Image 1 (spheres, rainbow, N blue to C red):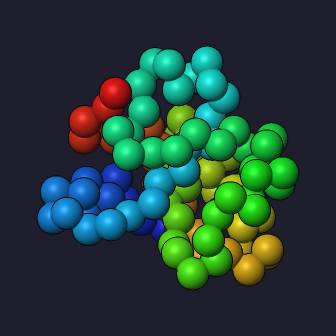
Image 2: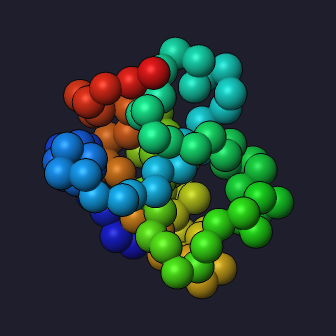
Image 3: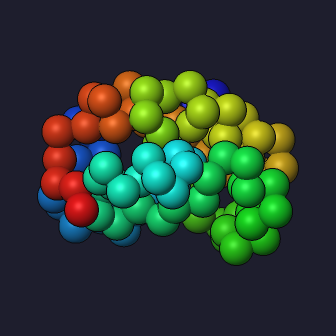
Length: 98
């Protein structure tokens, strides 16, 4: 499983790179703040909503601490998607949130 640090994600955002972030936390968790460009798809719904994703793009998976996003990353990889887990999740994120 590929991983990426929150610092690397922030650097990519700051440099204007087009990145795709999926926050797999529950909607009530997301209300506490999410990465501004992240799309919320709760882990339990990922199986049913993965058709919304493009297999040609890479997705950075995020959750509270990195556990659920690791599960999501492995699941998507098994389905033929390009996914990478953000280490430490939102606990380690130091960038802007909404």
